[in-house]
Image 1: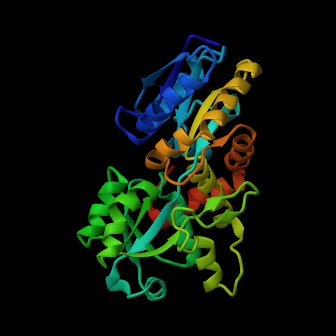
Image 2: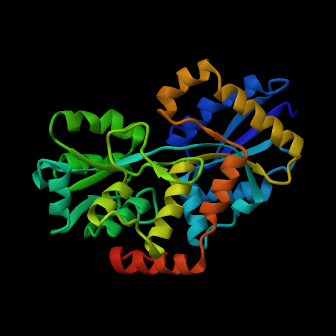
Amino acid sequence: MPSQIKWTIPFGVGGGTDVWARFFAPWFSQNLPDNPTVVIDNVPGGGSINGANIFSIRASHKGDNWIGTSASTQYPAMLGDPRVRYDYADWTPILATPTGGVVYAQPRLGESADEVMASMLKSPVKLAAQSPTGVELPVLLALDLLGVDVDAVFGMRSRGEGRLAFERGEADIDFQTTSAYLSSVQPLVEAGKAIPLFSLGILDEQGDIVRDPAFPELPTFLEVYASLNDNQMPTGEAYTAYRKFFASGYTLQKLVMVPKDAPQELIDTYREAAREFVASDAFKQEAQAQLGPYEPVIGEVVQRHLDESMDLKDSTREWLVNWLKTEHGASI
């Protein structure tokens, strides 16, 4: 067991992935043999591409170098972004943490979710977004599959900025991940200033999309789709793209990875330590505030989901590039 583990976080100090890593670091340190020091090394830039590129070139293969990735690290790799020099096939996952999210709308569109959906199918709606290839991508795909004409205004510096645009009445709909929804949007819902439409759901171990435990009363995107399409499920390249980017960006939103040629014995030890602390009452209590009602996924299950979601066929990628260009004026 190394005495020190250097954990590269390709984002700045204080961001979501940095806070996440600093939450997990002491749990790993305290539960690994000999209690190694876990040192966080922030290498921001390029929306995480810079730090991931550097890690792929410089990381030791002894198992004492980790990287923490997020959806904004996964998506450029899947889309074939020319800046990407890293390959997820070169890394092995230790642990992943999922998240969910909710799409909600202005009450001016209708008094209920059904009324809002009917209104959205008749007229274009405005969404304040960060980037067409960012965390909103599965949401844009879901709305397209539902037949909603979305006028996405890109350039928000955060999802929080998008929410503020919604609160000012500048956007008709918005989307927030679970933690932000619970803290900042639930009060709007309770005050009658927002109407929740659907959650993205979560993937179960069989790979099926099921209701989000954080929002058990909300239908998933697929349930809403079925209600509008004679109980049929979506098909085609758009749905394939949705599934892939939903899985890699939400089911596997944040990942602890090591170079795959690190000693297998060490990889197994890391995974076993994670299993032990994730099962503990102390962790569950602390994790509720940091992770919500989602349990981290460990080892082979992560690898299976990762292999499936990151494997984007050329035909799907080409469809997506064309769709982003024609629907949202975005070039990759």
